[in-house]
Length: 253
Ligand code: GDP
Ligand code: MG
Image (cartoon, rainbow, N blue to C red):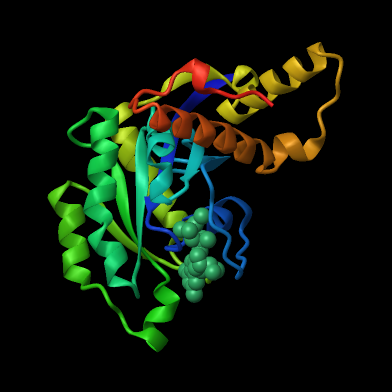
């Protein structure tokens, strides 16, 4: 069976601790965790979402959602994760003004990397549940203006209570769909990028006569190993006074 399906790559961008990982967890798994763990490199999840409010219209979007680590030292790595992105949620923290000031940087870094003048996005002011106790630190009109000037929307969310989280992803998907349209894809053939990469790794390890432990593939372990290798390679290029990292910089262990 074949149906209209839209496949989009979506980035979640913003300063550390604004709630990117929490928004994703809330949207994909409907859960919220209090303890903070910085996301290193990037992780991604997939979720299908119905685009139309019309019950008879079952047009679906399959989103691959990329939670890109915010640490500045990962800037080179970060921009490689931008490749092929269709849009982004750009997130700031309603009770930390500094995170709003960085929004412009996140937006322009993305546009520059994707080589596009305008990229579909929704601007997110997160942690709306804290406004009452902590006080709003970002002027709502400034946030609205930033979005409006770039033909987009501003939405306030709380990953903690779940308020507007689904709405934010839906609006973004709608904005992307208006711009990009869809394609006719056989659902059974469709695989997420994650699945593809994981299966390649599994295949390789198997071809060497070994099994893969689940936490290598499903946890963040693989991601961390890749980061470690790349960090070493960057350091070697740097010590050589080069700006280009090349294959010979990769140390195998
Ligand atoms: P990230 O670095 O942008 O991925 O941020 P996290 O999702 O890890 O969240 C950073 C911290 O803020 C964590 O302690 C979260 O529990 C907390 N947090 C995230 N979203 C909200 C929210 O909507 N409300 C409140 N009160 N806390 C939040
Ligand atoms: Mg995170």
